[in-house]
Image (tube, rainbow, N blue to C red; front, side, top):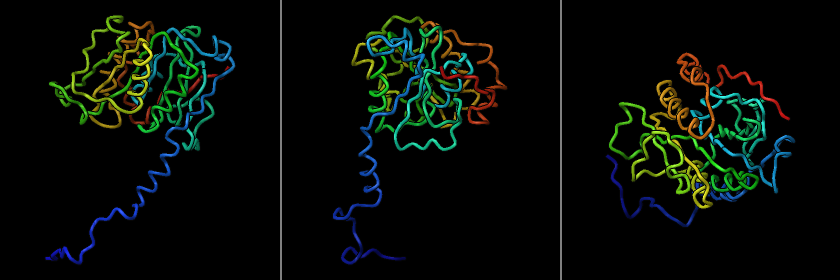
Length: 274
């Protein structure tokens, strides 16, 4: 057995930066860089006093939320896109696809509803800058955020391995406005990253916002999670004024195909840029 000699053995030192630290410092320079937000002419024409002011904005953050919205409603009218610097667009399609590493925005209900489908991962360090860049052109009257909370981060009395758990968090402005029947997130849970940045932005600016969080066991959603989340999503969106196609969202075969193909199955895009 090798014995460690404390007099001659190498010991940790802070005089030389590790390679990982150098890489982290180089990346940190870009954390505050705002995203590139591009709007279509139709969306630009709807701006009032320099901002788009939809009655309802639905922000889908993460693969599961994006899959459900792409199936639950007709996302055909593209309003624009949000892109972060340094994120490669190689392999992206011409028309919006769930496989693209970007964020697309869509108009529904004659422009009264804006859907923001953020299917690309945004690092927690860049979440605040991303949120500020998006809301620089936006002022929604009401906001619904759809996202997830990993099971190992969940703190509460229920067991996420026995059933799919769904919770909501509301801003002070939204308290009691929507009758959705979804339980509130137990105290002691910490939400981080892009969902927290968007929610905090609304809280600080007195915007009515409700965030739905599903407790997810794995990074990639499975059929059981999508089915349970679809019901809660449909209920919450209906309370906010957006009706989703419940028959499609309850189709186990379509959701299973979506899981197997990374969300692309059954989403041949008919979206147009106008």
